[in-house]
Length: 161
Ligand code: GDP
Ligand code: MG
Image (cartoon, rainbow, N blue to C red; front, side):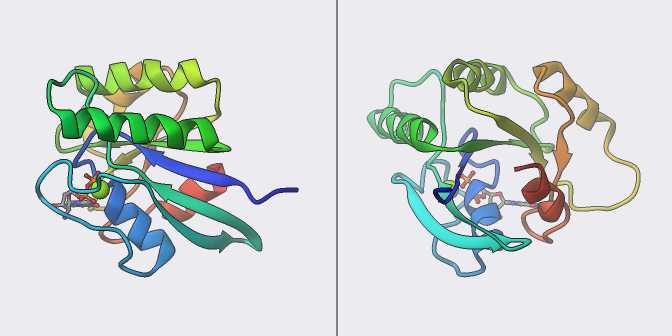
């Protein structure tokens, strides 16, 4: 069986690069406060429970934009989606569910690829933030709570992938 490709997609600044780095274990990807810093696709190799996979970090999808850089990033993400075996759709508890998330979800569903929904920046353990439940509205099944900073939930995420 060819090595599966897991692509991390979502809006800029939700923590895709930080999650990528947490899973790959090397600081290969660039983490920045400025949305749009990862412009190209970045690949890394890892394995989970004996299964090797390729992980792809993307620059992020801003559904509506006039910026050429953000348009370029969206095209790059689209290419990553097309080549992926499974897509990790990363969202952010700090912003909650946004209209752009809804649009990205629609774009991902059109791809016909399996989608694993994750909500990042869930840094504290215990009872989840009530805003977490909003993400069920995307209709993508149970969201997985993760913290790219701490690594919480990344095992569950890879299990789901
Ligand atoms: P990307 O644009 O989706 O690749 O997002 P980045 O990985 O560059 O992260 C954007 C910002 O979110 C940075 O300031 C990160 O430090 C922050 N961030 C990423 N993951 C987490 C997390 O799990 N918890 C918290 N509190 N901040 C995070
Ligand atoms: Mg990034």
